[in-house]
Every structure is written in structure tokens, then in C-alpha cells.
Amino acid sequence: MLRQALLAASRSGGARRVVETAPFTDDVVRRFIAGETIEDAERVTTDLTGEGLLVTLDVLGEDTHDKGQAETSVQRYVELLERLGSSGLGTRAEVSLKLSAVGQTFDEDLALDNARLVCAAARSAGTTVTLDMEGHTTVDSTLRIVHELRRDFPDVGAVVQAYLRRAEEHCAELAYEGSRVRLCKGAYAAPASVAFTDKDEVDRSFVRCMKVLMAGKGYPMLATHDPRLIDIAGALTVLNERDADTFEYQMLYGIRPQEQRRLAAQGAQVRVYVAFGHDWYRYVMRRLAERPANLRFFMRALVGR
Ligand code: FDA
Image (cartoon, rainbow, N blue to C red):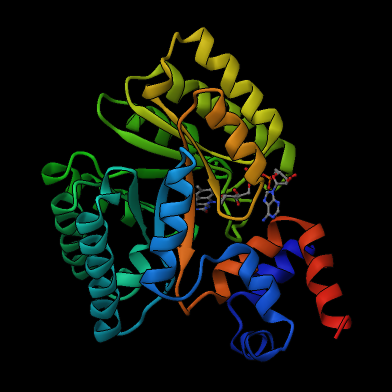
């Protein structure tokens, strides 16, 4: 119920104005966002990679309805990737791209062309792109774009959301050699006709998907902070005789940082998803929706001032 309310607020202009201008907002945002500028992102990436972690960088912004704004998003990615290339960070840091930031909402072909520009910049920087998966109505379009891009850029990462009823089918289709696939639970509101709405059902789907990906020939990227699922991933590694360099764990910046370091110290590859930029509102609201305790933190910040 609370989750649905927060996800609805993430799409509401009125709620956005209240939250963005509230004095407590800074503390909440700083927990999940690396900062606003490319310099902030570079500093955090240098720190994390210095600790043995990998990084995927997200330039915040989504659901663009304007061609000019989509071009601006592409430029910011290209600028970021040039910086990763020149600093040498491209060997340890890739980027995550939301197609809705580069035109998918109003023109799929434009989004494909724009994503191509980002992939070409990533290749020049010696790194890769993963296409984030957004709301359930965009899944087919995003998978079409993944397949199209992979003709020229076979290392483009895809994302499967375990809460979707079709998730296991998507994993089976994507578990081929060279295919980088991020598996996550799914962070958007979705109706019961297309998604599991019960938490245990989502977790069971995650396990089924993980089994398919870990037994397959691709490169699984297991994006979860859930301790039970991380334990099961460890067991599947042994069962499928996978070496540590054939898959990776992924977690979000600011969430379970000790666990990120514990796994890396054990020899696992761990990639931290680092979001930065001004347009943080929807991203942060999704983080609040994921965990009731975050809302308490948010409310304490609100009444504490
Ligand atoms: P779950 O929500 O059950 O949390 C398990 C435990 O992790 C909690 O008990 C808590 O300890 C900790 N935790 C989780 N979320 C927290 C939070 N916000 N604050 C504090 N603690 C928290 N989604 C999507 O739809 N499309 C996408 O492309 C991506 N991409 C993506 C990349 C990466 C690297 C990650 C880690 C996640 C995503 N997601 C995503 C988000 C994902 O779908 C999901 O919403 C979150 O990861 C939370 O789910 P968990 O698997 O962590 O489990």
C-alpha cells in the first residue's frame, strides 16, 4: 500500500514540488545519490574502484518528452564517457542508460539512434552500456532495442525484472554466450495481470531466473541486496562450477555498503550502481518505496527540523 503510494508520488508533479523544495531533502538525497556533477561521479567512482569494486554510472533523468532534452541526455553521457576514457576509469566503470531519457517515450527509433551514440562513446572509452528496464509498458520496446544494438555492440547489457510474469522466459531467451544480463526484482508499479505483486512470489521468481541465468552461457549480473538471494547465488555458483569472473553481483550506491565490500573481499566481482545529477526525484522516491524504514528516515528528517 505504502509502496504503491510512494510510486504514485514519484510520478506526481505536485508531490515532486513539495519534496524537492523541502529543507530536509538534502540528507535523504545524499544517502542515495553520488552528487550532481561529473566531477562528483568521478570522485565516487575513483573511491569505489580503489576499494576493489566495479561501478555502473547513471546520469539521472527519465521520461523525457522532448527531442532537445533527449539530445542533452546523450551529450551528458558522451561527456561522462570521454571522462572515463581519459582517466582510465573505463576499465572498471560502465554506464547504465534509461531509454526514456533519450526519447523512447515518444519515438522508439530516436531512442535507438541515441542509444547507439552512447554505445559508440562507451566503446571508445573501453567500456560498456547496460540498458535499465523501466515500467512494464516499455519492456517489449526495450528488448527490441537491446537486440538491435547487440548487432553492432554485442556487449550491451539487458535487464530482466523478476516481478514480471514473463521474467523466466526473458532469461531463457537472453542466456546465450556473451550476453550480459542484469537480474533485479523490479522497482516500478505494475498490475497483477503482468507482475507478481506478492513479495514471496517475486523472490521465488528471482530464484527461478537466477537458476536459468547461472546455468546458461551468458554473463549474469545479480542485482539484489537480499541476503537470502545472495546466499542462493553463492550455492548456484558452486552447483554450476562458475568462476568468479563469469558473473557479478550488483548493488545500489548507499545500500548495504559493508556487504558490497564483504563479497568483494571474498573474491567476488561486485558492481555498484552510482546515480548522479540534478534530476534525482523519481530515482529517490523508488528507493524510499523499496523499504518502509527509509520512509521513517524520511519522516524523521521532516519532523526533526
Ligand atoms: P528487497 O527490496 O527485498 O531488499 C532486500 C534487503 O536489501 C532489504 O531488507 C534491505 O536490507 C536492503 N534494501 C533494499 N532496498 C533498499 C533501499 N532502497 N534502502 C535501504 N535498504 C534496502 N529495477 C528496475 O526496475 N529496473 C532496473 O533497471 C533496475 N536496475 C537496478 C540495478 C541495480 C544494480 C540494483 C541493485 C537494483 C536495480 N533495480 C532496478 C532495483 C530493483 O528492482 C529493486 O527495486 C531493488 O534492488 C530492491 O530489491 P532487492 O533485491 O534489494 O530486495
